[in-house]
Image (tube, rainbow, N blue to C red; front, side, top):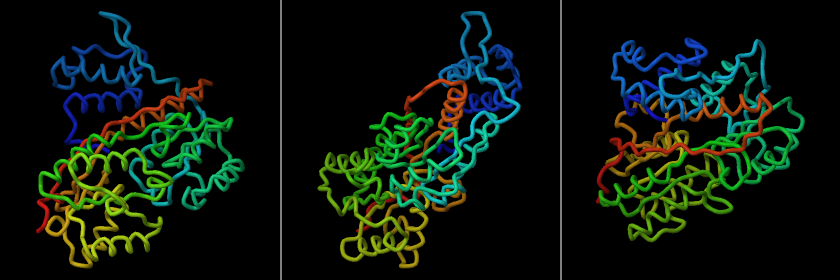
Length: 354
């Protein structure tokens, strides 16, 4: 998720125009770039670039030179279009800023969207338990957050449409969106090596490591090898997906050959590691550098500033809402898309400790 200050002027203008379109300030056709440039106080070139972004996202349709762009939002219904159940990975995802915004935007589009009564963690990531639960739920559409390959394959084989957010979707014939983090992760690892780091460890969920490492995890190990660092289970340690074993894993790592950097896959794990290490006198970046592979609103209040990977959550939410609109109109859409992340080097990264 991208912080506002990291976005270009063009992207900020596009965000503003997208919000105004969602609120139905304009209908039918879009005002011309000259009028918009005067209203917003920016150059006409910036407006044209922002409008081009909205065209790429399917919100505007060009009608040819000299003709206004047609607004393509779909008709707003007086009642719900679809009953959408969102199957979260775990209960803490319910309070995530992106899932809250996602539900709000789906409801704004006229859908009856809400979180399901159980999560994948509640169902033990067991495809049979998920199938039994889903078959008895009242839903027209499923959104599945961070599903395993087996679970996403089951949803893809069902008559009800399903959309995968993150998870093991690339090898499954299911509509979905995720993030492309490997280029940003590679940049982060290269920066760490420049700072003298050799003992670099990634902490990620069990379903991202088994039965084989996911794409981001594989690229992490490959980048270490490219930098001349031998990699193995030390760099991608195994731990059971519960708080107790996560803390056991941390203690084991720091018992003999402590890592000089921890790359942690998500904010929940990041804050859990930060607290556990601080209680043992391990402080970032003095004793260990810390990088989170995602963004959290709390980071804006953190000091030192958290090094992290960020991406555009608004674009992802727009893709989900647009897909739901197509499904509501009876169209089948199984396209997948990736949103590229960038590495933000915060103050939790420093030279490798001696």
